[in-house]
Image 1 (cartoon, rainbow, N blue to C red):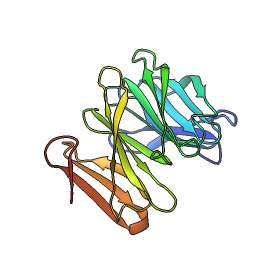
Image 2: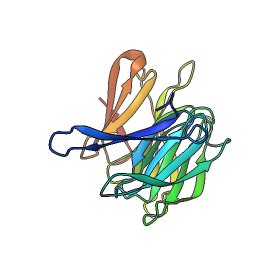
Image 3: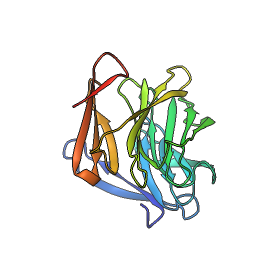
Image 4: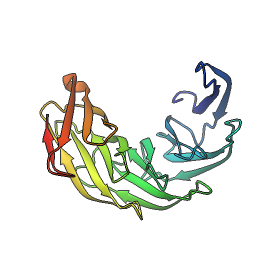
Length: 219
């Protein structure tokens, strides 16, 4: 919750979907401008980013009650300035974040027993401008981000991800004349197609594998 500097959560009825038992974690220091929350693939830790605090905040999650406890945080006013999005790799081994002010993609190794984040690494460069949405491809072999650049140059960037270390390399770029002010990117379940939304042109743009990853044919 951006304005209340909080993370809010509920119990959910698995049959009806009804939400109940609202709980709030409010922290004006560490959750200032809280923007994005994600749950690790194993359902244990929960992670959040706070844009104005330049933090990644995370908690242990009780699997029976959903209660969040044992708050921990990473603060980096340089590399996490304006952090807006986080996502985990499908195997739970890494956490990836995108920032608006620092123009970085930041990522960590994740201890799958404790959820603790270590070994911070930072990607930056002339093409990594406002990476405001990140996601991993099915299977976790690639990480994608959408970037918005004033004066044009909006794009979908993607990297190869090392399955052993989580390291990102071999940055590549997808562009299109209709890819104006992109907001998000997602995949078909089989991973053969990638779709991007473009608010500036009221469009959905997608690409298809042609000769094997990562060669693309636009459709």
